[in-house]
Image 1 (cartoon, rainbow, N blue to C red):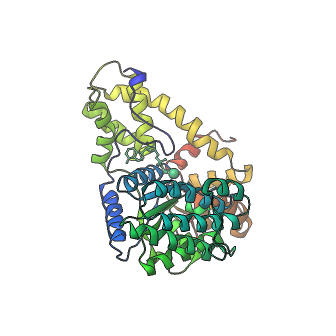
Image 2 (cartoon, rainbow, N blue to C red):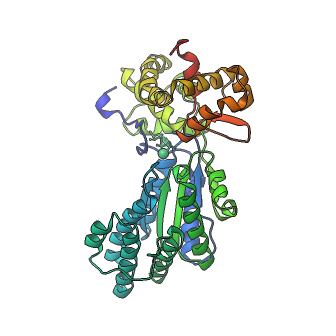
Image 3 (tube, protein in one colour):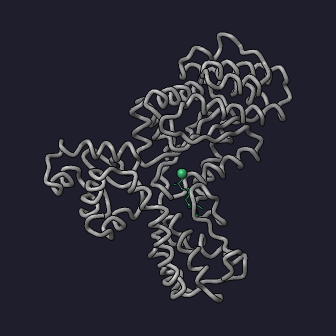
Length: 392
Ligand SMILES: Nc1ncnc2c1ncn2[C@@H]1O[C@H](COP(=O)(O)OP(=O)(O)O)[C@@H](O)[C@H]1O
Ligand SMILES: [Mg+2]
C-alpha cells in the first residue's frame, strides 16, 4: 500500500488515527469535569501503566476535550532534574492565556495574573519571562512564600475561584509523575488535597509508570484515597482489531482474518506495537485485503524498527553491570521476578546487587510491582533481551 497514505502512528504521545478501547476512561474523565463544575467532591484521575500503552495520548486527548468544554488547560511532562515549579509556571502561562480570552470578570483575571506572577517570581529563573507575559506586578504575600505546597495551593485556589465563577474549570495535566522528586510530589498532592476540600474546579490530572500510585502515597499517605488511580493496560482483542482496521477502512483498505490474528499475536494488544506492526504490514502489502503473509513479511521490518528505536536505546542507558542485571531478570521469565532470584542467578547476595537495581529503577527501566519483586517498565523487554547474543 502507498506508504504516503499509511495511517498508523508509532511514536511517543503521537495521537493514533483511531484511539481504541478507552471509552471507560473517557467517561470517567467527563464525569470528573462535570462534578468539578458543580462543586461536588472529586477524585482526580491518575493513569498508571507500562511504557507505550497510551497514557500520554489520553492526557493529550483530554486536554482538548477539556478545552472544548470551555476549561482552561495545560500539559507538562516531569523531567528528571528539572524544576517542577518552573514547569508549573509555564503551565500557568498557558492557562492564563486561555482565561484572559474567555473570562468575563476582568478584575478576577487581573488578580489571577498578579498571583501567577508572584508564583513565578518565587521560582526565580522565570521572572523575566513571566513578568513579560503577565505584564502585571506580583501580588505580594500570596503564592510567593517559596514553599511549593502553599504557593501552589494559593495559586490553585485563586484559579479555582475564578473558574467557578465562570461555571467552568482549570486543569493541569502532569505526565511522568513518577519522575518528580518526593518533595515536589508531596507539594502537588498536598495542594490537590486542599483544593478538593474547598471543592473548587482546579484539577491536576496525571499519568505515570505502574508504580505511580505507590510513589504518590509514599509522598502523602492519603494520596491513594485522594486520586482515582486507573490502570491503563493492553487493548483487548476487539479494541486491537479496531485500532488496526478503522484507520484502514477509512482509506478503503481491509484486512483478512489471518492478518488480524497474526497482528494480535505479534502486538499482544500493546498500542505502540499495534501501531508499529500495522504500519509495516501496510507498507509491505500490495493489495487489499492485507493478508497474514503481508503481516509476517512486515514483522521483520517492524522488529528491526522496534529494536533500534524502542528497545536498544533503553538498554544502552544502562551500565554494563545494570545490563547484566536486566539479562538475569529476562532469563527468569516474562513477568515480575524476585530480586533475590536475580541476585542468585548472578551468583551474588541480594545486597550486592542493590546498586544495579536502584540504578535501573532511577532510569525508569524497571519498577517494583511489590516488595522484593522487579519487572520491566517496557512490555516485551524480556523477550528482546533473551534474543541478544551472549556478550551484548
Ligand atoms: N488506545 C489506542 N489505540 C490505538 N493506538 C494507541 C492507543 N493509545 C496509544 N496508541 C499509540 O501507542 C503509542 C504509544 O502511546 P503513548 O501515549 O506515547 O504511550 P505511553 O504514554 O503510555 O508511553 C503511540 O504510537 C500511540 O499512537
Ligand atoms: Mg507517555
